[in-house]
Image (cartoon, rainbow, N blue to C red; front, side, top):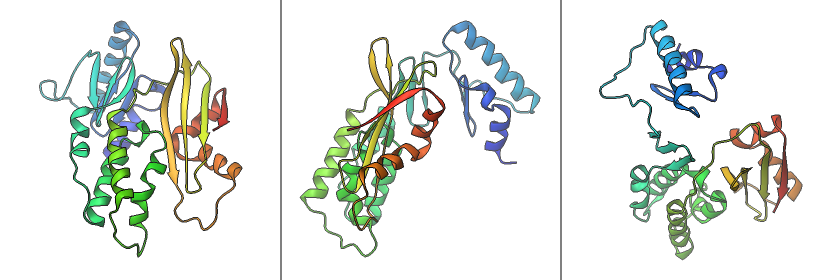
Length: 237
């Protein structure tokens, strides 16, 4: 059994949405301090039963209003980008070859959930990654490169999903080579995004019909698909 499978076995679906584990990083999220103590005790008991120990002095943070986790900042408002982690992306120079371009796209991909229509914005860059594509870094590529960086600096806070509320899926399939959408919910202070999803279709030889692309968006990725289990609405832009 791999370590990740062990963590998944210790903190399975019955622990959601209070406990999340990725390798040796475990996060406990609760609404109240009292609830937090209850789940903290449960986590420590399960780790102890599995013969696992924690590094309390160097690796653990207890009862914090916000925490940095996997390149993100989690707090009471939701999920936001960690400015320290995105600094390498913001300071990345314009790519000079395919290898450096792929590295930039890989770094940026970790934060795609924060960028509306991410795939469409990347199209001028993705064209250079196609097989046998000639390397030409023109104004179109430079503008896309700078626009993606700017979008990351303006990344919104992504709200925590509330499964007692309806979900809203909005789709944008205006582009012939990319689709995009946003999963959101309406809270007491208005509508907030939970995650942005998008996908490019550079391999298409002809434009896919609008209904087909909308269907693809709804089935694309692990973000939008789970709303089918819950009440909600969808629309196309």
